[in-house]
Image (cartoon, rainbow, N blue to C red):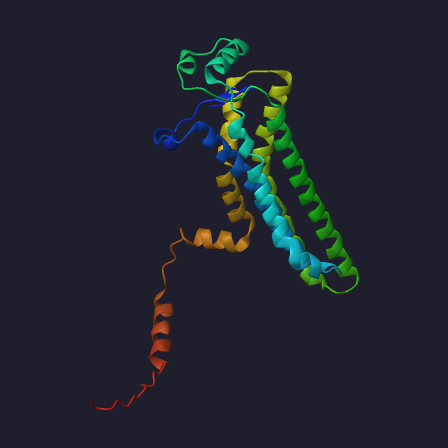
Length: 269
């Protein structure tokens, strides 16, 4: 449970019962959210690398893995200082309770952990990482659209192939944007409540719930907007009884198939 606008809260679940430190759980959650952004960036970059035809493609092919790996490494490195910026918990808890209004008793009695008493480093690195990641994704999408149109005008791509690429690209954008909205709305709310020093536990809990279901939302969207996934998914629940004629035709076809035995000579020992 988060206690916005402060950087405090307490954890519930299996990892807490196993004794995993709260700061480690906090860093892990933030790292996974960063990697969600990077996975979206990687999907569009992969599509850009496959579809686009440009002069500097050999150079980009040689560095694209390093470029993407550097993003994952930077995402991890910027979170490491979080573990060393935790304040004295007793003093920090008193300041938290003074800052927030009247809280329920279960929050006062909960094992609250204060990640930091200052937002400067945490907000700066996270917002900067988000801005750079989104900017790169937008740039790649614009280059992908521009290069595809150029190939169509230069007759390097047929109209039919262009329509196929357009449908797939639109489906891919929808697949990425829908779960991304479930991440950006709570993040925007968190930035607003921190800036205005506003506390509303109910809305904060809704935001945490939205963050938690972005994975299943992404899966559902992927199933319904991509035809192969949609057909395979619904075929698991459809029970189509086979007709007698189809069975007989199958038996007829099987009976007409001849298997020629393979004779192997073996030397007697």
